Each structure stands twice: as structure tokens, then as C-alpha cells.
Amino acid sequence: MIVQTPAEGIMKTNDWGNSKVYRVTCECGASDHDHHVWVEADGNDVSVTIYTTIKSNWWNKTRWHAIWTLLTKGYIDTESTVILKQQQAFNYAHTLLSAIEDVDNFRKEHKEKSAVARLAEQGDCE
Image 1: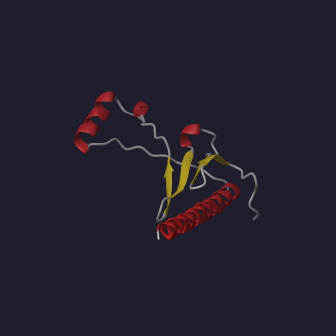
Image 2: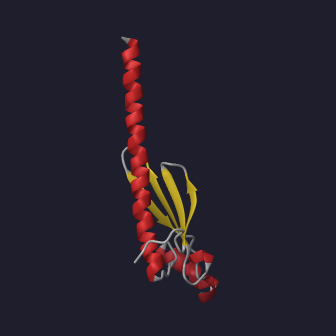
């Protein structure tokens, strides 16, 4: 299987060097099933955050049932599903790996540059 460029079902929405943001679309076409993926590098590590906007299933329950569930459990169950074709899943995996590598390299380069700048400043003070 070959990675597609541009990748089917994967859209880069932002790129700031130390973080990249993607939208992964569901095969069904419903935008509320889309997953949003943030790959970010801070000073020490790289993190990946995947989220989606969940809508509650109010239409399946009466308001009293929903209120009772919220009062007794403290939350209302919701779920989100994203359906990916094989090619889209392959593209997703490759995009995630590539983004992690990119932001990690960005983090390391900036860490090295800031270390060199600190050494240069110390050298000027002597």
C-alpha cells in the first residue's frame, strides 16, 4: 500500500512548526464524527491529542430520563465513531508518525539553538 499525498480523509488544518493539527474525516461524511488530531512538542516531549465533538443522544431519552441519569451517575454516556477505509487508515497512521517526527525534530533544533545562544551569551559576559 502506498501513502497518498494529499492523503484521502486527512486534512492538515494548521502547522506552527512545534505543533501540527489535522482533521480526520469519517467515511460516513458526518462532520460531527470527525476526529481532530493535535501533535505538539514542548520543551521535553511530544504529545498527541485526539478529540471529537460529542453530541448527546437526547432524542433517544426523555428529558426526565436524562436528568435522572445525570443526577444518579453524574454524567450521560456518549460515544463517537470514526470509520476509515483501509487506505485512509494507512494514510492516518503515516501522517501521525510523520507529524510526530517533524515536531520532535523542530523541538530538538530549537533546543540546540537556544543552548548555543546561552553559551554565546555566557561567553560575552566573561
